[in-house]
Structure formats: C-alpha cells, structure tokens
Amino acid sequence: MKRLRQLTFLQSFGYLALVLGVLIEIYALFNGPGSRLSGDDMFGGAVVLALATAFIHSKNLPVNLTLIALSTLGFAYFTFIYTQAWFWTIVLAVLVAAFMIYFFGLRGEVRRNQSEWFHF
Image (cartoon, rainbow, N blue to C red; front, top):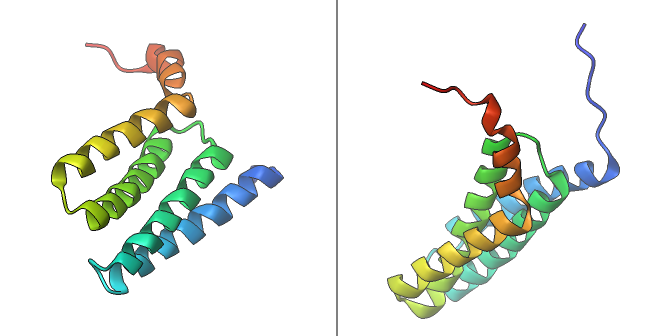
C-alpha cells in the first residue's frame, strides 16, 4: 500500500489558500466580468494564490509555474480593468511573473534539477 505523504501545517495552509484563491478568481470571472468590482475580486484571488505558492513551495516545477501563471493572470486582469491599456497589462504581468519566479527561488530549482532532464 502506498504511504501517504505527511503535510506540514504551512503546506496545509497553502493548499487551503490555493482552493480559496481559485474560487475567488472563478467568482470574479462570472460576477460582472469587466466591472471594477470583478477586478477587485480578481486582485484578491491573485494575492491569495501568491500566498498559496509561497506556502506550498512544491518540488514539482509545473505546479509552481501553474500557480504563478494563475496569480499573474489575476494581477493582469485587475490592471486591465483599471487601465484599459494592453501595454500596461502586459508590462505588469511580465514584472509580476519575474518577481514571483525570483522571489520563490524557481531559477535555482530549475538549475538544480537540470541534470535530470533528457538530453539529446
């Protein structure tokens, strides 16, 4: 029988934040899309997803990148709703993604795991 992996309190909190963040972002998408209230809700969901990324800190790179992408999309949606400018939306999305990748140390993790990648 497969042994279950024990979760720490912080990881449990991270998974709870993940569920809440996704629910908030889904709610924001369907509750008056394009309105400022929807943008505010999306910002809240993006912040909660960023916290989830920090607390989960999975060893699985695709999971981390997916969480960062969802959070970045939330921040970009918020920016677009308030500015109505694609340029600033893209600039902010790139800056937020770069900051989160740097802050959560994914660059070092990719470098450490690079030796396990398939080489031609």
